[in-house]
Image 1 (cartoon, rainbow, N blue to C red):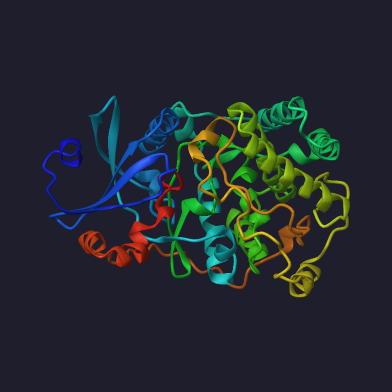
Image 2 (cartoon, rainbow, N blue to C red):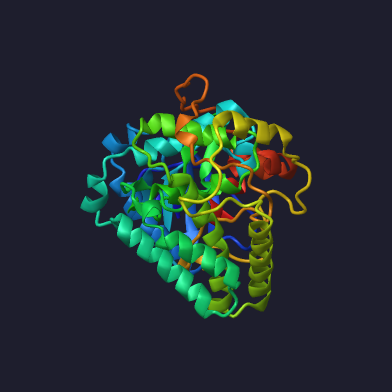
Length: 409
């Protein structure tokens, strides 16, 4: 399929890129005779095929000039070929290993690199998005989308009234929705970020590329429990050079909470009682954290404002071993296909029942020590043929990691 998709391609080795049966794609890592590393993927469902099509539009919109503005690599489309009523798509392989949200924010250098990477996306000129026919949403339209999502969740009869009031108060707060839309990945999560050492090397999964609310790309940071999560946000603000709005962290927290509503709606739409039960349990946990005030207020005019020093003292005093769930929360499971969640949102959800100790209303004053320029590193990828012949090696091979794409799982 790869040689049919890419004229003149000669492949000397191949290895399965992921082995989990619940993934949306079959994926294979290829090594060409000219030593190029390529990835070929074939969608396994209609939802995956739709995402693949959207991803291709986005990758083609990201021209060389746009890519040169980014401090990390983005997959390059190489070719495609029809197969069994769908198509196989070949892209170049992006080096780097995936990390969990907690790992991405565990140490200052990597956390700051993450903040710089997200800021680079949001700093892109928005004209190319419209030229490619991709969505451009105003601040009012972003708010309307949130209102519609909350309404759907309320109509399910499963949304706790306390959360409905909390979210409606947030959408009614006009100050919260005064922001300048930016270019956004739209589906950014920890599993879309590839790293090498302390630097972000690549970002994958661009099917939701658009102009919209920058907080949408930062919601996963608000649910991470890494010691340097605040430094990632501070680095983001420094890189944006004052272009970010003061209420962005609160909207990011709102989007993080709304992932539970999306999960609930996925269960309702698919009539999956196990998903519904899991979503209801998570929503109940969020209600408890709201009542005991371990979750920050969403309305811009409520809640105490902490200085940076206060935040740092809170971080030092907050225990990190009390959370009952593993990092990542209930959505990090093979019990469902991530592509099924496309209709209501595809970002993974962290453990929202855990306390979030950061009130970042005054986050604009935070500044990371120094500002190292993120470097794109391209370490030699392991030979796929070795992974193919040695199963144990394949499991530890970063190039064979399911994190290369959340949909390859």
